[in-house]
Image: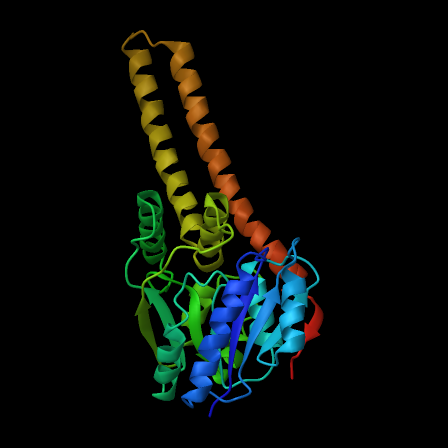
Length: 314
């Protein structure tokens, strides 16, 4: 039987963790009993710098139950960093599954993922079948995000978050990507290898609060765009060209009005033009600055995560 490690990033999940641990314990026992996975398979709980009792709960269960392991990061490195800490530092296995601790992604799908892996698929994506639990605003913004990423040329699986299975070889290959501006939803498809989708319905959070409010979602989306597409930089060039054309047309119109003796309102038109071009310049500089910031981060090559403590890891 193949060994499975389920990586679960946790950030301030003291309310949800007891529920998640019970559910995952039942699921792992069921898969072991049905000989779907090896007996030494584990659930690796990664504490991403939580300020509540999350690490205390993880420490207690990992100390008592060998089915659970714990990784405590030195500080908050973010969701993507916590995922990589579990994948790269969570022990050796034949396959890895990543799933959030809130279990809104249906953990029962892990059984189907493992079956797909046994059929020869090295990457299995968990894809939401419907968005019935989302508000209209969240549905609309999610649709716009995926459409925008597609238009910008980014290869991303529609309605897929970070619920996926990866083989040992796929994880080892992903280590070759030395990027620090992480956006795993687009990095994993770049790995290649044979892949497929498993569909499920997402459920509402049972306890605790969402760790992805609107502000974080917007930052996450912008990180994904700037990490994988240079189209915004090309748009800056296009805006510059269009602005120059507009300026020439405006200049010719000004000369025409001057030589024909027409009366031109001065202050209003002048302020309008200055405001317009100032906005274009600042927008362009902002986009270029974002990309320069990405380069600055990559050059420093700081660690993606720092592990402070491990419990019950082979």
